[in-house]
Image (tube, rainbow over all chains, first blue to last red; front, side, top):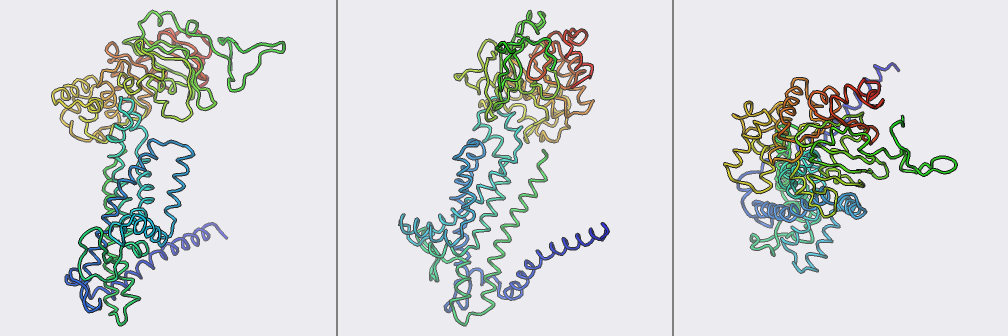
Length: 281
Length: 292
């Protein structure tokens, strides 16, 4: 075959392959928006479910998910950044750090239902938090950790070595160098990674299944030791457990959940673009 | 390698010298033989004494002995990989950052030992300044860049900081260009200006020795000329040790020149002598471009 034809065929195949990636995204969005957009209004977003959840709003589930992800990130962000700084700036290459790194990679590969069972065993039962917001937050935080650590390490790694060298050469300690030079320049990357990890766990059902999620609560949670409703679990029960569920309500809930995830991803992209434009080295 | 000036100190048997693995080359003569007496007459700020350095099992520096005269510009020249940068980065112990570096021998800064486990490396580095190959201002304002070393020492008095910024930028010949934009990001400056800012930052804490690792290698000829002028003007006030690839640059800016080859100091003397009348064939070959 002559090289030009071969090239044309190759490019066409590559192009079609790329297009195939878009198809499911567009399809999922189209179906959910078409089926669910009709029900979205202020009332739906801000009121309690009614009539055995077959009517009314989904406010408790939205609030629950917001509480869960923000609580989780408050736990995982400090731990993750500390671990990333230690691994990247202090630890060096030792057998121990290699094992830690391997552990982090494997942590990212653990199925989410296993996290759920782990959370049940450790937080709910062993630490006696009960089925509660705090147990759910801790479980989600552990799920976020590998993503935050990996993203933070990459962000730290992308700070030029010459910044560290010049800071040290001017008589700064390693900690001063990290605090004044490395961390400020790694911050955008850390933020982006954190938001992405939050977006990932916001839609998880399995980890909250045994640790926090309530089938239905007539009131909003009053403390971190209360259960709460949450969007992914709510979506799961209204689509499988309740007969005669209005289709629109299910898809409306799915649309809210997916919108929350999209907004977070969008925020991460905006931060990245903004700082990439400012970064000149 | 041409061994004319190198004394073979390996053990000798009936069958000739024994090659010691990992110590491929015999040890060079000490300073007295390769250093011009004119260097030794100067008062040294920094004394490098019998300094060896290994990266893992590869030896990069062999018994370097070299006094750096006070208030002068000393240039380190030699082909790539000859150990110039390794040597200059050993002075402020930046090589400590690399895993597997070992060293032997010592250096002294105004009499104080640099290589001893008791030395506070942070305090030691405060007494030196370093300018790197690629200009590396922090992504902060010009002002904050200059006073970085004061900030880390907790200096917050506005008048002290202002005064330092003005003095250093003037010394670095950047004041006129930068005085109206001190709060702008240093990254908005041109490459040459950035490098002069790095020099200003390096002299902010009044270093006893200013180390420069090929400070002009990433600059265009005009910016290079300006930085060279600046280095020349720093003589007297500062002691400068500069690594350069550029022979003409060494000739233009330095009082003394040291020629390094394969990790050894081969010849060290007044720049004029070295360039006009080198005593070694290797030096002459390198300077005339026959290798390098």
